[in-house]
Amino acid sequence: MLNRALLKILPILFIWSVIHSSQSNFWNTFLEDPSNVAITEFTPLDFTIINSSNVWGETEPCGWPKNPLGGLARKATIIDESISNGESLVLVDAGDLLFHKSALYEGKDNIDGAKIRANIIVDSYNAMEYHAFTPGSKDFALGMEYLRKMEAKSNFNYISCNLFNS
Image (tube, rainbow, N blue to C red; front, top):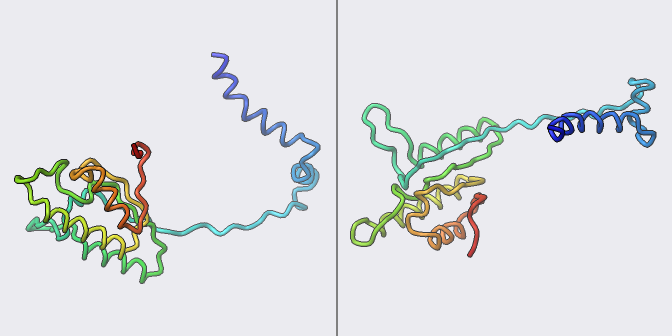
């Protein structure tokens, strides 16, 4: 109980100490005559975040007859149009990028085809200048070693708080 009360009052005590500190010329000047304090203007950042996820190793549109979604070419076109319009972009992918399922098995799955598509996707993301990627469960379908191989080939960051080298 005491901890909660202390946590609530600490910010107030901190602000009070800054305002009343004789060391703080800014606050002393501001309290005496606010018109004497120079406030620096700032320029707001203007950018667009393009987020993708659940590509599942697909390079072509998904094939829904009424409204096919996805595809690397479509994604690249959207990015190119945004850049042409003068937008600053942050390109991120939230995972399940490289493969369509969480595990691929020799003899059962087309592993060579999956590797070819994964390489095409990484090359495309490099060309589109993606900034970051967070691996999802399906991205480990060929194991950590293969994912590290794809990371080494990538020009974008792989971000995860629970992956580490053993």
